[in-house]
Image (cartoon, rainbow, N blue to C red; front, top):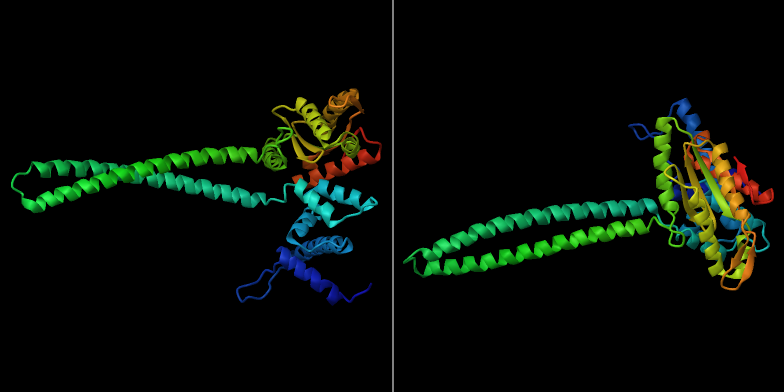
Length: 375
């Protein structure tokens, strides 16, 4: 179907605006203002955003998917390079007889944790911690003030009661002062309890934050934790001129394991791969579960070839084992995984290295599985 330029660009423009991917620089008078160099760079960036928007729209419309925030977010992650593993899943599913359906996409979204906005979660945690700090400070100060006030008031009550012939007015004042003293002591006790509750809430928050970064099945860091780890090591390794390599690993023919032996057995196989990869990890080698049957590794101080060799040794050890389903005594057969390794500093940003490692993993799958490929 052929359309004119205006009609084809209008929905793209609306989608760009909706995604917050378009903006125009303006001078003091409100008019758009750019130098020729800025204009050229802006046009290039805008063309890239246009291609991204068109890819997202084509994906949703060609597969008859809902144009919903969840679908848009997943499509953006896949086609922008943010989640190369998701992009590979979409390519493989598109080639399969089942094709891409809304039900399948919803399942993928659930596997990715329901698409949580980690940045919003971090901001919420930071705000809550800040509020807890402020609350504790205020309650501690208020408790100190009421304690000092209570001590002083108590002394005044004693002095008043010792005064002779003060009349009914002083007696009433002494009674009122006693009541005020009791109230300040009650307020001080309530503030102490509130402070204790704030401390308990902080401990619960710390546990929840740790739980949010650990994969429940394998005990490994999850994708969220790995992204923070990658960011930290990327900055440190670049500052110290150290090599930094990243790898994607994927269990070969994992669907067959689930189909033949069931999902419970599949979970045990995932745990086995996690233990195998964790065995080669140390302070400079980190492994995390990226989602499903996929794992991601970071090798600090190792160039890609050495990282690939280390990963290949783990692959070979696992491939040499013959495993049996202990629940049914039925053999699993050979359990293997494939991997792709990339040099983090060979790309403009860490996301580019992740995408390259995932593409190398895809080549390993196409070349027969049970192998490690370099990007």
